[in-house]
Length: 267
Length: 263
Image (cartoon, chains in turn orange, purple):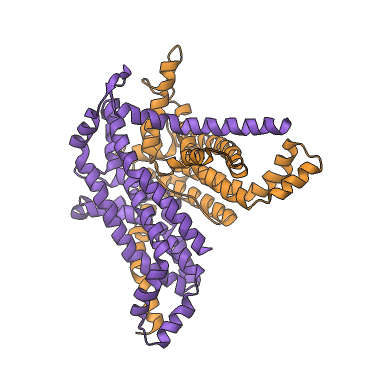
C-alpha cells in the first residue's frame, strides 16, 4: 500500500460519517422547509407573520443584552484576574470557569433556585419577588452561560497584551479611564468581537436554558420546538432551524477568523 | 488613590460575578441534602433524596455513562485516523472537510436533531435504539476530538519522523501505530476527556432524539426539574456535579498540557 493511499484511507470513515449523518440530514431538513403549502416563501413568512417576527426580535434583543452584559462583566473580571496576583485568585478563576461544563437545563434550574417561588431572592426580600420565568430570568440564565466562555477568551487575549504599554500610558499621565479606552480596549478588540459573537450565537440557539425557563416566553429555540412537537408544522420548524443555523454559523466563522479559537463546551 | 478606586471597582465586579455563579450552585448542593428545603438546613441533613434519585434515575445515569464510553470509542475510531489524514494531506479538500465536520459547533443542537429526525425518523429500529442518540453525541463531539489531535500533530515534524521510519522499512500502518499514536497522545487524552465531558452533559440534541425508554442523565434532570420536588431535583443535580466537575478539571488540565505541546 502506498503512503498516499493509506492517508486517504484514514479520511474515509470521517467522510462517510459526515455525509451520512451531517450532509444528508441537513439537505433533507432544507428540503423539508419547502414542503408546506407556502413553498419556499416560508422564509418570507418568518418576517411577515407577527408571531415569528416578534419571536425573532425578542430573541435578538435578549441575545444582544446577554452579549453586552457578558462582555462588560467578563472583560472587567478577566482583566482583573489577568493583571493581579493575589491569594485566592485561583479559586475565583475556578468558580468563574466551572459552569463551562453545565448544560443549559442545569443553568435554568440554578436560576430557579435564585429567582423561583422557593428561590433565594424571594426568601430574603419582602414582598413577592419571582423572576425566574420572566425575560429577566432568561437573560440571567444566558448570562450565566456566557460569562465563563467570554472570560476565557478575554483572559487569553489579555495575557498577550503588553503591560508595558499601559505603564507607558500611565507615566505619560493618562487617566485610568484613558488607559482602558485608548490602550487596553483597542488591544483586546478582536478578541472582544470574537467573544461577543460567540455569546450572541450561543444565546440565539440556547435550547436547554430556554426549555427550563421560557415556558411562557417565545424565543426562537422554543418556537422551533413547539412548531415541531405541538403544531407538527415541520416545514416552519425546519425553515426556522435553517435560518438560525445559518446566522450562528456565520457569526462563529467571523469569531474564529478574528480570534483563532472558539471556546465551546456544554450545550 | 484613583488607581485603587478602579481596582476596587474591578474587584467588586469580579466578586459579584463569582457570587452570581457560585451561590446557586451551593444552594443546589445544599438543597439536595436538606431534609426539608422549605424549612431550611435546620430541618436536618440527609442522604434520603440522593438515594431516592438513585432509585428513580439509576438507569439514566448508567445510560449516560455507557453512551459517553461508546461515543469515546467511535470518535477515536473515526477521529484519530482522520486527524492523521488531515495533518498529512493538507489542501483544500482537508480544509473543507475539517470546516464541514465543525458545523455542529456552530449550528444549534436542536437544528441538527431535527435534521437527523427528518432523515432517519421513519427507520423505526434505528430511531428507537440507543445508537440513534449515539449518532447525535458523536456528531457533536467529533470535531473536538479531531481538532485536539490535529493541533498536536500539526506542531510536530510528522513527515521527517515518518520518512525515517519508512527508510527503515516500516509500513504505513506500522508507522501510524508506532509513531503517530504515541506522539499524538496528549491530544488524544485532551480530546477523550472533552468528548466524555460533553457527552455526559449533552441535552439539546438528546432531548429531541431520546425515547421514553432511553433517558440520559440530562434528560432525566429536565424531567426532575419539571415534575419532582425541589430536593430531588437538587440531589440529582448534585450527582451530576459530582460526575462532571472532576471531568471538567481533568479536561482543562489535559487541554492546557496539549496546547503547551502544540505551541
